[in-house]
Image (cartoon, rainbow, N blue to C red):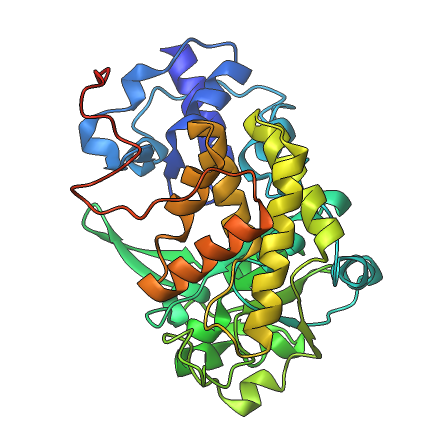
Amino acid sequence: MMNRDALVEFLSANNTNRGVFRKRDVVAAAENLGMKYPGWIFTKERMIKRGTYDLSPLMAGNVTPMPVREPAKIVIAPKLEVLIENLVPSVDKTYVPFGFYKDLIKILNAGVFYPTFVSGLSGNGKTTMIEQACAKLKRECIRVNISIETDEDDLIGGNTLIDGNVVYREGPVLTAMKRGAVLILDEIDRGSNKMMCLQAILEGKPYFNKKTGETIYPKAGFNVIATANTKGRGSDDGKFMSAQILDDAFLERFAITVEQEYPSAKIEKKIVMNKMEKAGKIDEEFADKLTTWAEIIRKTFYDGGVDELVSTRRLEHIVNAYAMFGDRSKAIQLCVNRFDADTKAAFLDLYSKVDVNADPVAETTDNNDPYFDQTEEVPF
């Protein structure tokens, strides 16, 4: 019983969410106290959702009283906090810096509040750039994916029902402010006028939380970086149909707007080679052909010759398909199938001219796949 009470006492001392704990954090706490796996605590009645438990009844004193002992501040607490709350992104060894990356490092290093709006076509590494800049500087960052449904409760926080009780849950924006983290508002041009709840926050001012009565002051290092495919004016060409027109007063709060382009052919080849190394299928000649092919398509797109292009992300998809199937033509075919018939045919034809040694890419239908041998036995 004493071991159980010690665990409950420790959790009570670290109770920052009204008795709601993640299972892995409770297990980590038990290990730090030298206890075995605390299976007794994870009952169905206490489970809110998979991996999350409401232990507030235990916090209410339904345990054997503990004798007073000197270090009720157990030295393990800081270690547990780091384990639970580390929000620094992992370093991606395949990432190759380009474009706005160096300037973004300067902004984050300056330590001043400087909201930045990064726009650019899909799949050119906008969000990855921000995450990897934070990883390099060992800065915490919180990414929030914006949609038309995103509202004040999602961003700032709101009340939610847990086990019959109304519980207030703090949103990612206030969490980032308190921690001095970088807040990434991803695909911000998918949001609605409900984003206006961020007006004061985008000015770097303290925020009064009307739901709790608390005033939150932004900690040093807090910053907001938004990403979007458009500049908040909608999409005239229809490529990004869900992109919204954002309020001008909202957009004016961002200090600068950056137009992120696709990487140069030289940089992109390095990215492709890194992805190939990670996938375990290095083919420098193929990497060279792919980047040349993508560059020609983009030039044609910018000149108005085609309505679609091949992004850096799509090249990564092709690399992964090539690693799985070991066939250049098949990898390209599978990864351009998302385009309409005319665009797909044009892209395949162009690749056959760029890579004259590649096998011809055959058109496929659901009932006629040249890559599937009907007589071959398929392992299950």
